[in-house]
Amino acid sequence: MCRKNTDIISLLQELEEEKGFFKGVQQINKYNIDAIIELIQYSNIKEYGDPLFSKKVIRQGIKQYFIDDKQ
Image (tube, rainbow, N blue to C red; front, side):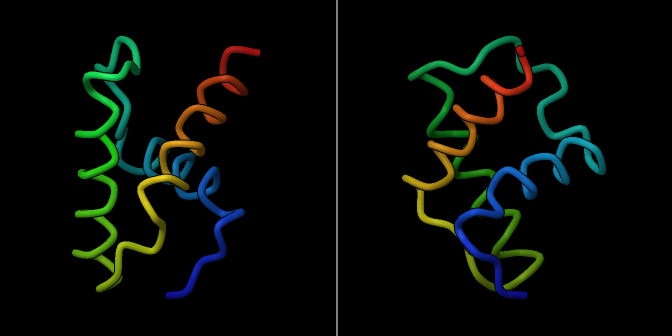
């Protein structure tokens, strides 16, 4: 499955809705964001055979996802 970089927010929403991916995450900070990114890439490789997004794109997507979620 091929995804565009603009779909990172959709992927994050899908992970949360279907798997409760962010359940139990109290906050995203510089200490845990890299681990979260690694888990997302691992999940994508396992499911699609490809990481789908660069770490930079995932990092930006996570930040945007949580900014939008708070508003």
